[in-house]
Amino acid sequence: MQKYLIFGATGSVGSNLATQLSQANKEIHLIGRNAIELEKLSSELGCDYTVLDILSDDIYENLKKIFEDIDLAGIAYCIGSIDLKPLGKTNKEDFQKCLKLNFFPIVEVIKVFKDNLKKNKGSIVLFSTVAAQRGFTNHSIIASVKGAIEGLTVSLAAEFAPDIKVNCIAPSLTNSKIAEPILKNKIVA
Picture 1 (tube, rainbow, N blue to C red):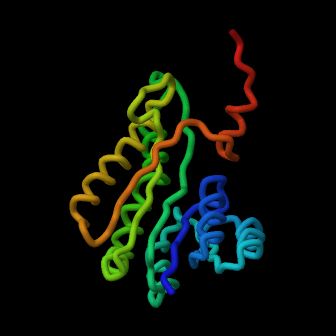
Picture 2: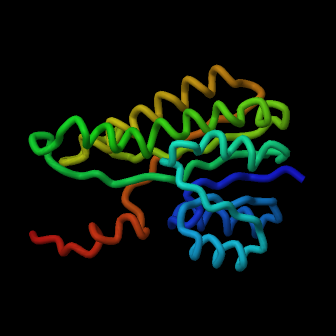
């Protein structure tokens, strides 16, 4: 049976997606760096998981080894960050760090699995932010990097059509673990 790989499976978006796919009787494989949370979620959903840090130097070799025999239906890259600060307080390293987590890994993941996805008429789901199109104060880092994700999405959708579907979801701020510090702040009128 074909499986869906969910990167960032223990985050709010990844875990909700995993739950929905599991409820739809889809085979899923969870990927994340938090072994305790992955084990708990995989136990709840009755699925496999792999503990991997997407930022490790040997991630791509590990992906090839671990998943060389998997039959893929799709990939969801639910890994992300919220990097907020005024442009005047940013530096080159802020942008590089954001690209290193949000952009470069998914490019390599897609390279590893594109033939498998093509064979199975699979799909890729990426995540951006509404800030990439709308423009919000202090969002120059994350909006520009997620804008790169949107550019990658439309390019790959054209390049891989009709064999692989490539889509990008661009939500606003959601009630999630990653947004919790922001949501706790009181708005002063």
